[in-house]
Image (cartoon, rainbow, N blue to C red; front, side):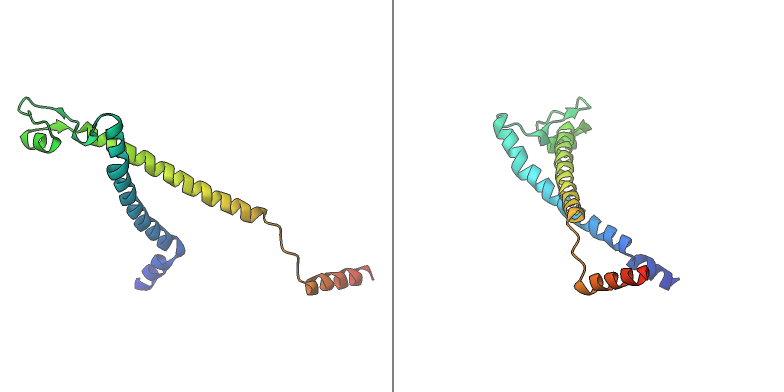
Amino acid sequence: MLKEFREFAVKGNVVDLAIGIVIGAAFGKIVESLVGDIIMPIVGSVTGGLDFSNYFLPLSNAVSASSLVEAKKQGAVLAWGNLVTVGINFVIIALALFFVVKGINRMKQKQAEAPAKAPPQEIVLLKEIRDLLAKK
């Protein structure tokens, strides 16, 4: 049973999937930082200091705070600003992955369109001999 598990775990597809998950998690952190540290501050400066992370809708009358962190301490809130930020993260990740896959497909297409190398001279001579023998 241990041998079967080892064969399963070492198969190319399982290893490729594991590598993809690890790289995807790291890529997600990069995009999260890109959105949180670069894109959202730019959006905030263009819109006059707009910060989506502090937008929320209080669900009880006890919530009177102006920041999301304090509002959560006072009661239930709908943090729709976080949803907007996560949505922007998703769009950026989807666009980045789209361009990566598009680039990979373009490289594969170029490889498929590459002209086939001429066979070695020995192969050409052997084919000529074969054709001459077939005629006799």
